[in-house]
Image 1 (cartoon, one colour):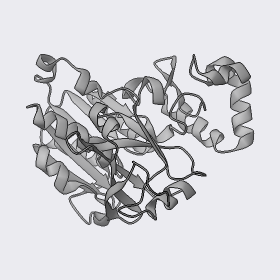
Image 2 (cartoon, rainbow, N blue to C red):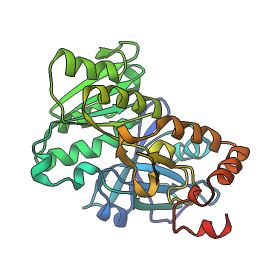
Image 3 (cartoon, helix red, strand yellow):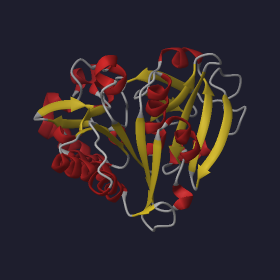
Image 4 (tube, rainbow, N blue to C red):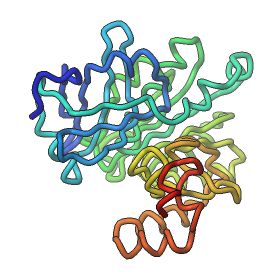
Length: 301
């Protein structure tokens, strides 16, 4: 573990199996970040860059809260860190702030918003709900998970959301079914009108939420954080098509109009990007558009 470094872990909680919450001492990041943005964390000298959405922040004490799932080698290493340890690098805030944060206040005040969080997506939804509540706006939230033990941040979200609904695939808690079943229940059975839905979670979840909400005629915002790798536009991993235009989740997003996202293309690219052969094919096929315009990698690609 790194020692005598400024990015100290001040809190650590296990939220569910392999899902952890950490507070990191990072005053500069905390003083500038907003809901919807992310950071890049490097655990140690040999660590990979890990893009993580900002779950919360405290400007007064200078901490930023992250939530991550220990899946790959880098996040598994991070999960071994304890309070008092420090990470090598903690860079941010990166990306654009949430569309709701940027929306004119008189316009947002007229909107009824529903947040839909799938799995670890609850950590992405929480700061937006908290911000809305503290600025006097109202919002409901659906938290979806495989089963009760994987529902995270429910108590925190309940502090700021007007209504919280839980859906679990196995029916062990709340509505039995996935988040789409919960949306149908609220909109079709309960007759609740929503102007905007913010859906954040696994790619496949966001895809099917957008298919449903397009049928229902509800504007939907999604976060494409799941496809980010480098976080600067240099690696080309998060290149995607939005309404026929090439965008990069880490620079232009991570939030986009969900009804304009080509999810099938994005998921296929992400699968190809996992192999060296796939990366070569993507670079050859996409040429100068493989990276974000203006990054130094263009000169060598």
